[in-house]
Amino acid sequence: MKKNSLFILFVVLLFFVGCGNGGNDYDTYGDTDSDRNDDTADSVSDEDSSDTAVNPADTDTAAQPDDDVETPDEEKDDTSETDDDAASEDFWSTCEGIIACTNSCTEDDSECVNSCYVKGSDEGQFYYRRWRECFDSACAEDKTAECSAEKCAEWDELCNVAAAFEYELTIPAPYGNVEFAGNFSFILNNSYPTSETQLVYESFASGKISSMPLTPGGTIISFVRTTADQRDGKVVEVYQIPYNTSSQTVGNPVVLLKIKADSATEGNHTVGVSDESDARLIVGEVDSKFNFSCYHAFGIGSFKIDKAVIETGSAGKLSFSSGSAELFNPQNIPELGGDATEFLGVSSCSLIQ
Image (cartoon, rainbow, N blue to C red; front, side, top):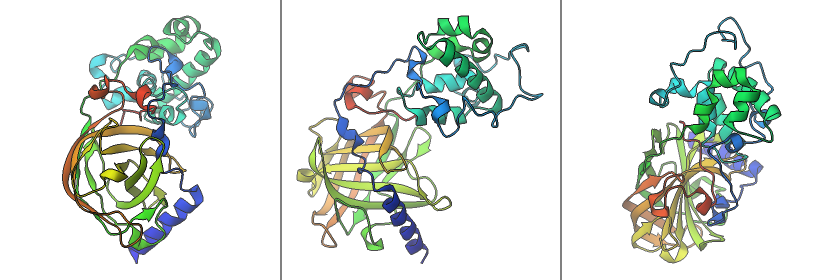
């Protein structure tokens, strides 16, 4: 009964969001329209915090100045504002840390900017909002550290803006790992589950990205469907989706294994980022419409399909009992020359977990 109730909630959710496009945002592979500049605040969304759910540029309720909040006239504590300290949680809670974090966001990615902002302390958020208000107004045509220092001196000093603009996140390669094992006895035809028999309540991909597990605690829903995308044509998609029973919402990260239809056969197969690979493994965050809004990692490795009957309905079967892959953040995929966000046409999720 419990699983059935969870499934009903899951189906209702998919119905109301319109099912999205099945994560095919990645079909923009090879596009080079995105223009990211890590050296200036152009890498921070122009909409920025004022257009996010938190509204950091306009909302004072989250961090009103009080007796514990330092003002520009008070002495600044620089203990958390060095590169040696930057990896600590304390650093990311500061105004400098918020700005440095947003430098990992692509242009106009307000969700990424917001995720950086909410990691800030009350003080860090307050300083950031005040600096951002001044910077967006006074430096709209010159989004540089020099303009910030000249036009927004008080908040610039408190936020250590010059250092924040220059800060570069260290992205390890590989960024994580995954192991495969799954067994499915139903294949959907370009659709999402409509009955409990069409999905399984367990993962097919286990591992982690950085310190974030691919299978967070709670309910996991997995299913298989056939569909087509612009790059690979006909594919077999295997989804792994966390489900938050408290908020009754799809959770993150979502794992998607996209197997080319011609390669969905018994035997050993490759997973990678090249067009020659048999499959692509994607780990990312989905939005309220079930589309990928950003990408944590892409996998490079191999897996073995033990049984493959690619027919829609209950006659369909897909199982794999072995295989593994290394995970690479799109900002550091050595096989693609390092930062591959423009080549892949994707936005990287914030690296600050």
